[in-house]
Image 1 (tube, rainbow, N blue to C red):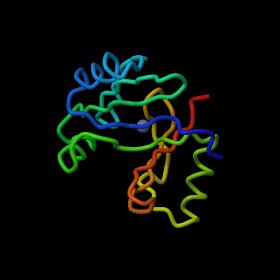
Image 2: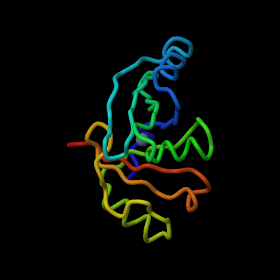
Image 3: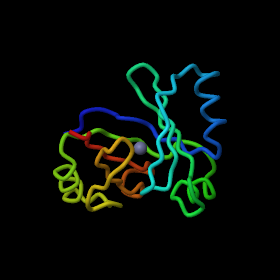
Length: 134
Ligand code: ZN
């Protein structure tokens, strides 16, 4: 089942610049940096109370975030939903006709198991599912 909105992912060209905006100007708290090699992305986790925004900077030119920036510029990239059982959720979404980018979960930031659902089947929003590492 869906437990909560886990985070919002925002594509940025320059992580330092983006962190400065979110931290110094907007007043969110920097919780830490992480590089996720599998997704070719550098992540800065920003906390606003219990909620989280992930700033995503491509770590290589063929990163999905680099392609997103090229096509659409900086901005909201995805919304992540926390689920208790990612396999069951993926199977249910597939049954309901959603187009899955990942048929099988893979490892994302924080060691969570994640999978993406194609924006073409969700009204234009890239949805990430995340199951917390137990
Ligand atoms: Zn995410």
